Amino acid sequence: MSYLKPSIVEIFSEISLKPNTLPQVALFELVPELKNNGFTEIELAEVSEIAVNPLIKTVLQKKTPRIHCFNKDKTSLVQLSEDFVIVNQRGEYLGWNIYRKIFDLAVASLQKIRNPLPVSSLSLRVQDEFTVPRKGFALGKYLNCGGPRIPSWYANKSDACDITLGLGFLNESGYNKVLNIRVRPKVEEVRIQIESGFQNTLKDTDNPGELIEALHDESNETFESLMTDTTRKDVLGGER
Image (cartoon, rainbow, N blue to C red; front, side, top):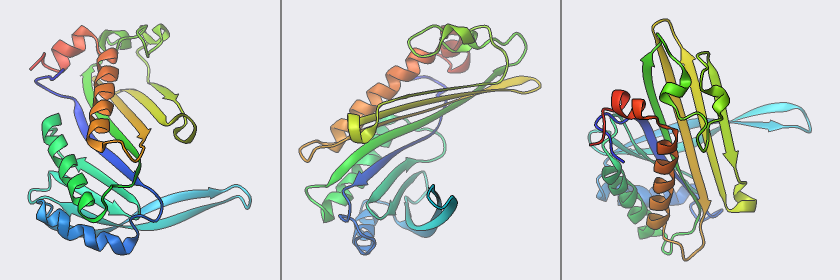
């Protein structure tokens, strides 16, 4: 379902490739293909990653180089690192059809240098956020407590709360689903944040475009299962 005032503040997908199929040197083969597809603004970056070694009880920080490829107005971004590609739509959410165009261009660029494309897993991650009045607030007014995902125990709660749900291990089940809900009351309003992630492994014969569409359907079904009619009307502005 599409709303007049969508609550999505971030949407991106993660394409994990089989080990050693996209080494750092190959990233520089990929950049010209992305530029040909409209990602003309190139920046170099580093991402800090935290790793814990339980044997020697130390926390290690590793800096991973990453290439950022933006379109001209920087509403689209493809991030490149070794065996890993992230596809973002940035800023105001422009709709799923626009996101699919960005995703398809990134995949087409990858297929120019790696065909068949050796994808091991694909994920779609979405963050929604909205605020509602603090006066008279109860979580069940805005989220479907007692529905398929949120326990009814939360329905009359007005305090800060965190709800975390997870299902499946990627390597064992072939999928992983994560849902995190954060409720944070302030003086005059309450902020509700919903982060969801859906990840599946791929076989060599699977189509990334078909899988990202299936993950999007699952993401939509999850979001709709959380909403109340009050939220649909008063927060999201009703159906487009």
